[in-house]
Image (cartoon, protein in one colour):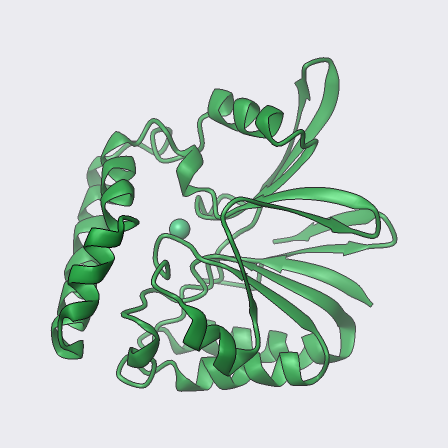
Length: 238
Ligand code: MN
């Protein structure tokens, strides 16, 4: 039995392949996993827990529920796309919500977990939008709107994010190494696991004279990407 970390599946009814991949993964997870950590952007967008059917994600919730019903502990950290996930979602799926960041210990090894977008400090435009949307004021105003309007706003935000990707350099949209180092120092971590950048890789570097690792999870647009931890060994299958 092992532990798996995944992120950035970006479930969207318009991308049925990713959903099929996720459903196959959850069917296998119930037999093989003890813990599953979802580090954000499981959903391509989320408009509030009351909008799950309106955005066609009822089947995804059912797939998650089947995993927790089978006895797998599923932890869910919100990403920048599904930051509106709330307690009702957690109750329906039986997932445990994790704040970003969180340090978890699996078999006596500590991992610092984050979605990852907070570390992309060179992308000042994203950081400003992030601050605004994570504010109670923004959330309150958004949740006051009727569902169809929320869905339109979410679509508009995705359009903006796509057009921004076209005009922002790849380097600017990656994590900033010194932000990573101060983040790891602050949390006394030697192993960081995150997603968001869609650049699956294992980075080893020196942090204050000691080895440190940053595991980056990939997206699921073309294939499954997951990091497995079993018997003291971390293996990234991208
Ligand atoms: Mn993201």
